[in-house]
Image 1: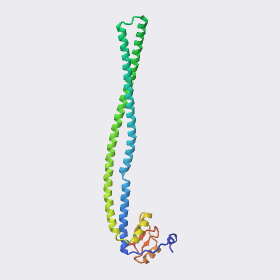
Image 2: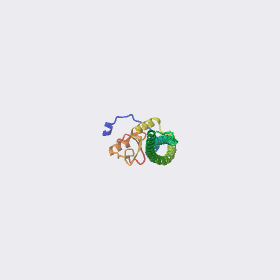
Image 3: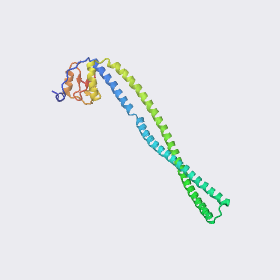
Image 4: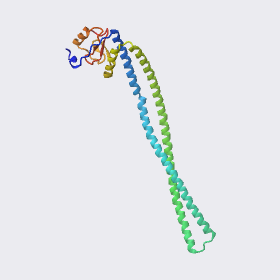
Length: 259
């Protein structure tokens, strides 16, 4: 007894017309192409690039929000500084009018008013310096926001282009997939239900459910079959469905099997 038979549970013998077994190879060929196309569809280089650009977009958009918030805060600060300067200037103007009117004759009151005017002037100078600093910060923040928006717009343009390329690639693959599925449906009609059920079970387990025996080698596992197993396979009826002693896949005998 072959050592592989001792390790593998025995299954009932399945018989199918040799022509139907050969058709199984066509079904497997279509399934292999469908699997390759499906893998290609989910591993397009555009997908990785889209993920990269999307991450960059998220990071840039965060910077845009920060820059826009900084601009808004500084605009409010500038408005407040403007109001403070105007308020102090208005007070100075009132004091100057009082001083010029001659209504204040008391020397102490005049001295107090002059001191207040001096203090107001210093306050105005300080506020204007602060206002100038806010304006400079605002100008820088606005420039930063403009740069971030430009980078974001350029990145989104790239992203849209890559997405369009992805969509075109997916559409092309889907056309091939549909064509192969239609052809597979037509071919599989020539395979008996019990044989097809076994094939589908093995394909789910191994990725390949049926393989040709060519030049004494299983094309599923790519291993050469030993002489004893080859003699056993050669002695089995042509309509018996045999399995590869190495990988358990359905082994389809062909004119090139080397039996």
